[in-house]
Image 1 (cartoon, rainbow, N blue to C red):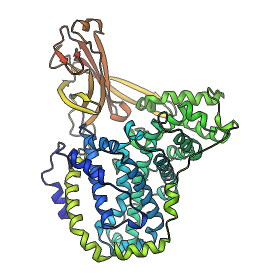
Image 2: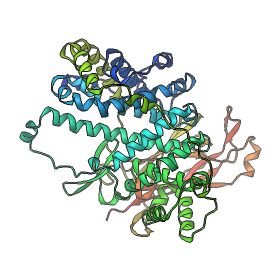
Image 3: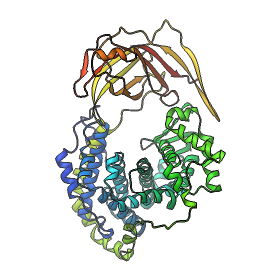
Image 4: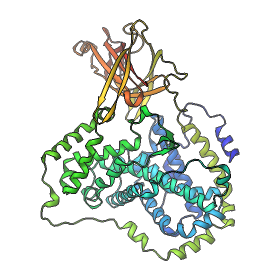
Length: 571
C-alpha cells in the first residue's frame, strides 16, 4: 500500500490536471452500463463495471470542481442511463442486507483487500455519482417515475439508518497500537462497513434534498411518496437535533467535513457543515412549498415536533442560509394556527398510489444461502481473486493518481498563524456558460494602517453572538485593471481562509446606457461566523466603459475602489 501511495503522489500539481476520461470515452462507458442481478454481484463483469463507475464518478467531480464541461452528466441524460444506476444501487443494497452477512467472515479473512474494498465502497461510489449528477434539474427529470420512487425509498431507508443507534454510538478514543493488532479481520471489516454505510447515507441525504428542490416539475407520485408515505419530514428532525456527523472525542468537538472527522474550534461551533445545510434546505422545501404542505397531515404531534425547529433559528443561521426566512414565516403561521392551503390529507378522496416494485422483485429472487454458496466458490475464492488482482491494481493506481489531483488544498491556516492579514486577494471569474467559468482578473487590496479597526458585534437569539473587527481598505485608483464581469464569481483569500460569491452586476447593452445605472454598488463576500471574515467591496462605475462581452452583448462598467473587511475576533 505504501508503494501505491508513493506512486499516486508523484508529480501531483496543485492545479487540476487533465481529466481521467475524455467525453467520447465517458459516453462509450455510459452506453455500455447494464443492470446486474443479486447473484451476479462480485462477478468479473460486475467488477469491471464497478471500475468504470469509479472512473465516471471521479471525472464528474473533476468537471464540477474545475467548472468545465460536465459531459458525464450530459451523457447520462442523453443516453437515459440514470435508471441503470438506481437499479444498481437497489440491487447492491439487497445483496448487502441478505447475502453479505452470510459471506462476511469469508470475505474478511479469505478475500484480498482490493476485492473487499470494492465491496465496501460500491454503494457509496454509485450514490456519490448519482449525487453529483442529480444536482441538475434536467438530470432529475431524466429519471423515470418508477426509478424515482425506488430512489426516494432507498434514501428514506438511509435516513433511518442515520437516525439509528449504529451511527450514534460514541466513538472510542484512540486505542493503543498493540490493542489494534488484536482486532480480528471480521471486526475490522465490520468497522469499515459501517464507515462506508455512513458515507452512502450522507450521499442519500443530499440526493433527497435535490429531489425535494424539483418536486414541482417531477411526477406527483414522488411528492406523495416523500411527504405522506415515507414521512421524510419526521425523519429529518433527529438529524437536526442530534446530528450523527458531530461527535465528542478526547474532550473536543469533531465534525464530519470533507469525509474526514475534523476538530472544531469553539468559535466555529455555529458554522454549518454541508450535511447540516442539506437538512435545513430539505426542511425548507417540504414546509414552505404549498403543494408539499397540502399533502402533509399536520396533526398535533407533528406540529409540536416541527415547531422545535424554532429553537435553532437565529441570525447567524439566517446569515448562512438566507432562504430560511420563508421557513421562519411558515413556523410563525403554524404557531398562530394559520394555514393558507387546504390539507388534502383530511379530505375524503379516492387514493390511487403508484408503488415501487423493483426492490420487491429482487427480494423474491431466491434462496440467499444458495446465492452466498455460489458466490463464495465462483467469485470470492482465492483463485478468482488472483485472476482479477493485476487488473484491479492497475485501475487503482490510475484512480489514486487522479484522486490526488482532486484532493482539496491543505487545511487553511487559522487567522494569526503564518497567514497574511495585511492584504486581501481576490480572483474574478467570468461565466462562459452554465456552471463553466474562466479566470478573468486578480486583484490585491491592502488594509489601511491609518484607519483604526472598529469593533462590531452580531447578536443571535438562544446562541452566543459573534464579535469582529472592521478594517478599512486603502483606496484604489478608479478604473485600475479590467472591470468586474457582470456575471461570474469572485474568490476572496484572506488570512489563510477563502470565501466566494456569485457576481450579478448591472450591465448596459450600450456604452451610453452606463450613465443610467447606479454610480456605486456594494459587493459582500463571506460570512463572519462561518468564513471568519466578511469583505465589503465598493465598486464604482467607469466614466467610459472599455470592456464589452461580445457573447452576452453587454458592457462591464464597475471597478473596485475601496471597502472594508471584518475579521472574526477570537478573544
